[in-house]
Image 1 (cartoon, each protein chain N blue to C red):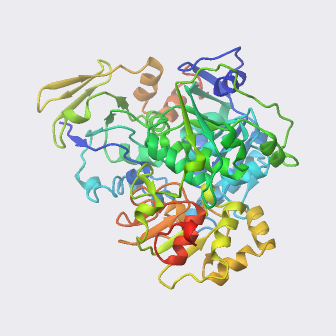
Image 2 (cartoon, each protein chain N blue to C red; image 1 turned 180 degrees about the vertical axis):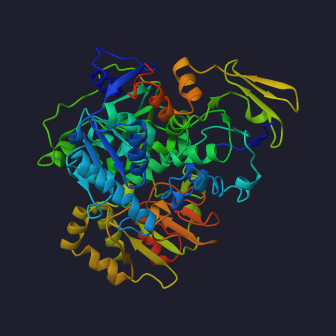
Image 3 (cartoon, chains in turn cyan, purple; image 1 turned 180 degrees about the horizontal axis):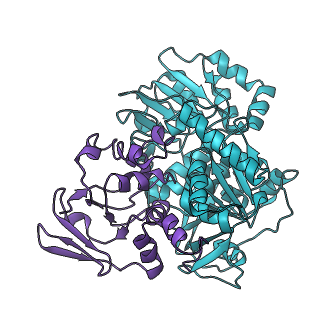
Length: 414
Length: 166
């Protein structure tokens, strides 16, 4: 799939892994942390006009609303930039996390080449597109010319068999895979998640899996487009699209199979995403904070899973639970369904749609010695604040169950 | 004389520069907090020209270019690792900071060893032990970006048209 998309984007008949191609980008995204550096770079080089304002998307999500004068300055800089460049796809502090907003607004379409100045850009691969994260200087190139050199990645096929058991989520599956392959187990590769088990997983769950593929080094991850993902895109897609599928007999550098039906809840232990164990093995570790949100697991279905566990229960006073819906759309859905009421009644703190505690520079910052269980994607030392804090990554259900217990808990027990 | 600073596997960009500093873009300001999560005194100990020697997957995690900027502004002249995470690798080159893949280098150094990196010859030399490690020299278009001091200065030197290196 990756080769087909990059061949189309570089106007070639075919391309092979290892080749370097100059590809034309279909969508380019920056947010409030990586965007300012792009604007400064463009000005320094002397680029007056971006290549195509209609293909650029700007989202404010990391520091919203502004939490410091520096953040406010960054926002001002980007607002001026979008005005001056005539960029209409601008989502100010109201809309949510870029990786949720782009699919919702119909930018993440099958077959597209999407680059974002954020490592979790690979999330969009859930819709069968080639999406990858780049740095700010590379984005200067893209904003100026619409092109970027890319090395064609080797493809890796991960087949999922069976159905996920009750209270075991796509998050548990991707954590298990990362634990198995390691933090560089898919380095530079394009990962294809396929099989009966994948077709069974919701669009949101597929986004969670593609999102975290970067935690094993993948350049991009994809799920073949099917009826489920097309249904999600109906009424959202901004343009007509053509689905790209792998050829029969396509070559892969590695082919693996995992059985979802045997899986139990997983947790990534501090301080690396690949230190993955069954929740059972770390049950009882006391927590100070539980975070439910992020581009990995802040979607409606994630909130719903957590709410089922929190309904008519109280979070003990020893735990701060923070909930941040991934977008305004998710927030509204959750309000309509009474889910936010469940969180607030249980004693959780509901934040506006944004990256929140995941980035460790905005809200929900951890102090020395504190322990957090989080539905987000990274548990690196210092990620959410103090280098002496500990972060465990888990599914929304495990986060909610742990919040209720005040210690890491298996959601199947609640 | 450049000294080596040796790190292990999977040094992530949050450890290189934490999220709470990303609101800044000034290189000197970022340099003050570089590697803080691993060694709070690193920024004050490192000298201009020093080299980082690391294990696998250096720079994994976030796409924040602040990580490469902070290392360069702190005085680091090159990073030699068993392997790099891809976004960091591109960011480092774009910032004019040589990121060199060199197998077996991690075990050949201890922090404080005197090191020499010869990009043209494709050699990393440990002058303290006398051992030399070879690597595949970088392609010419990357060397041109590095010689210019990064992608932005390179683009300013050329027509100002990104892609002109092709």
